[in-house]
Image 1 (cartoon, helix red, strand yellow):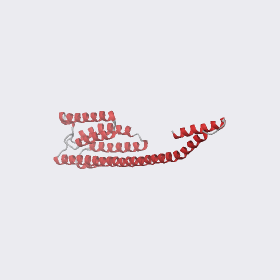
Image 2 (cartoon, rainbow, N blue to C red):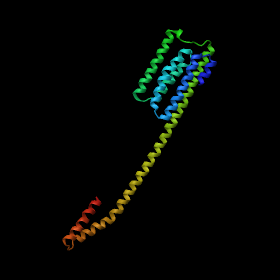
Image 3 (cartoon, rainbow, N blue to C red):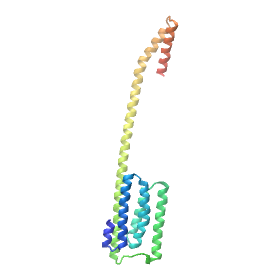
Image 4 (spheres, rainbow, N blue to C red):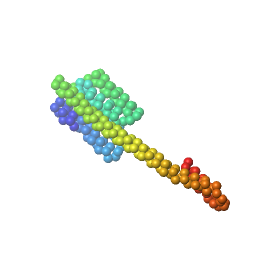
Length: 221
């Protein structure tokens, strides 16, 4: 939207302004859809194809070619692709973008008549300043938010780690205390059982006491 408004003052031309507005509308729709559906990767891919690989080349030829601020947006597109996509999809898409941008720059060089150049040096300078300022602002805000989220996540993970260590220590202390509290009376049970087993007993009494002794040994183990 900002580039569309400024395009009026830089004499960027009707098609450049229109494509900027279309890109803004598409970006808003994709953002809204991704938030509602949760299909972020699908929306990232659509953003890359529609805005970065279609709209950006159109804007490139309609407003100055490489004699404009558009090369800054090419950097923006590749970096955002790296941020948004994952794995092989990210690598392949970023390479395709770079090849497309190199290709349209070479095309503009070979066929300058395909480019709508700015009429004055002032318009060219204004567009360059707007281009790198917009890209710097967008990337700066994105990186700030990204690292803020990362640092928050790291703090939460560290807090969870400390809590897990605390609970583990409490568990160990509980088991140690429980073991000590069980062993003391269990020792008395086993010792007295051994003493009783040495007395005169009938078969049933001997059987009961033997089970007490074996159960106590199992519990001790």
